[in-house]
Image (cartoon, rainbow, N blue to C red; front, side, top):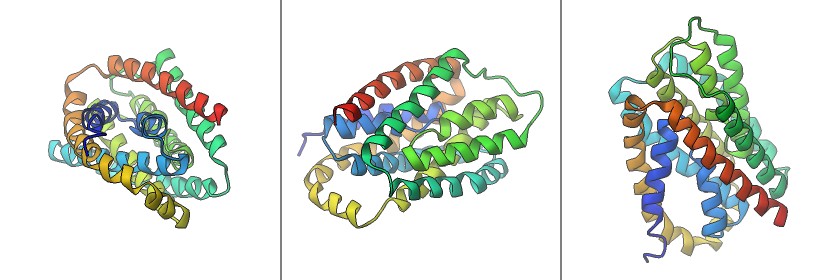
Length: 257
């Protein structure tokens, strides 16, 4: 019953860090689901997306109450990001697990290296460039649908550099866009094979979810508070280092399989 108790503090930590940085928590959930719990890749991908939906959903509720989401900007970005996530999810039906795992590791590594080399400064952009932001949303949505990560990594730095708004508003807006893409990708991945995998691993799910769900929901409430109070450039660097560790572990798993 308490075999997966550690998912409660782990889920809280993942959701808090990822939402405060405006990036998808699937980066950290995937290796946990694959390496620790031992779920098959397809089911692990779907559950990682579901964790993002729950955590980001909680974070969005907190951000809405705090007024740190630009709903007009978010709607303009979701119009291009969600169809892109839909396309990416459809493509996964024709791709084996190993390329998806390697793709996940590659995208996360590129994002981490980009943050380490050129961390986004938490200052207002001088001029808004909507076309650059929409292009980033489309690319991020495609990656989120394809390899369950990449939307926040691509979108948030672009928002910070090319969209005039308070930093915490840009982080909150990014969280909402990531949520929309993760929800789209999660719904599109539900098929007969996924339902069969859920049935096969129902014991693990039954014991793990009661600990994981409260963790990501509470973390979703804490993340926006940290985003408003801390220097996120420091948090991004910390996030990037952890992300590189995740990349190596997932890549090693894919190559070994």
